[in-house]
Image (cartoon, rainbow, N blue to C red; front, side, top):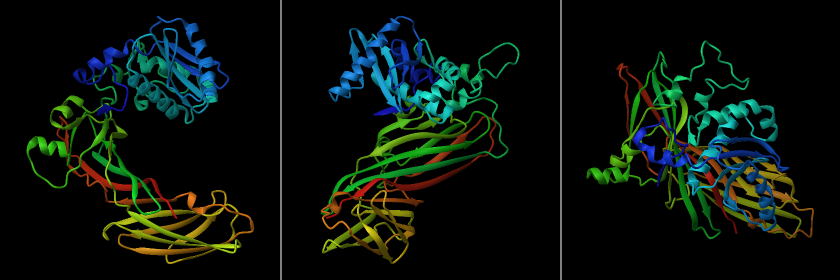
Length: 448
């Protein structure tokens, strides 16, 4: 499935989103912000064709759901439907009487949260009350009569500030980015040196059983940009995409099959679906161009073995062996191995072949830090603890060992940027820079 990961705008790439945008005019009728006490903080009626009192049914329904341990994200009262998300101490609720596209509603609600967080740092009841004028201005700008408009906070900040309306230059006029065909980028941007920095970042989620078998593994990747380009450039990105190579009839062993691809709204979806070309006019500055997932069996990059011995309920000894299972030309940086210990442990003593250890009693773990861990290496750590609680029968093996790390210049999936073309009508020369990073996500190894 391929999606834009932002709500779509009427001013976006026309043919790509017209049919989707037409659906939205019937969707977002109201947005309410509910505090913990169930009071309306702020609301916006986008189409004016629903009874405002309908929202009073929402909190009683939520209270009944909590009593029944029900967590449905969509609830109904009569002919009214409430689509809601919870953030901090707030409920954000959208109302409709239509058979709406729920995925688009939730996408918009989460984008509202992101915009508010970028404006107010923290989104909670207090920040809403302190900035209610700005909140109303933002709600008026991000949607018009049910159509999502500008949802990029960088563009919004050009004409909506936390001090309210700051722009007072002659007759009021909308910013160029609102009426422009490219709503996420301003016109007239100029730089002395034109560059594009691209980071391909992959997180490895892994769960290994106590017997050493891989129970769960997946790769979650993202491509992030930092764009320092003048004018209105068009970029074309080529990856070693398996589907692309099959379409073009080329054979190459090192290809990747991307799943659950999500793009920034700047990417032309129709072009990608036709010939797998990633073509776009990028936002200025930093942004996430795309994200993807690969369900594949991943060989553990850092393998952990541990042995825990108790001696007469008075002390415990933990032996941990860590082995890097990637090629020697790569190096894992800032490795942190978190080994669980009994909660009543004290008098820690450590011995390591490399790195340093510290006891974190608030987490009941030993943290073994290795600043640089080259591929094909193996290191040892021993920890001794006293156990003052003689009757403690806590099972240390219940909690898994977790590992944090980062490996630069390496991707576990084998994804590669084949080319990044930069086209701008003025014809200036620009330098593209690409960096690969693999890091730990939810990386756990169970112990005996």
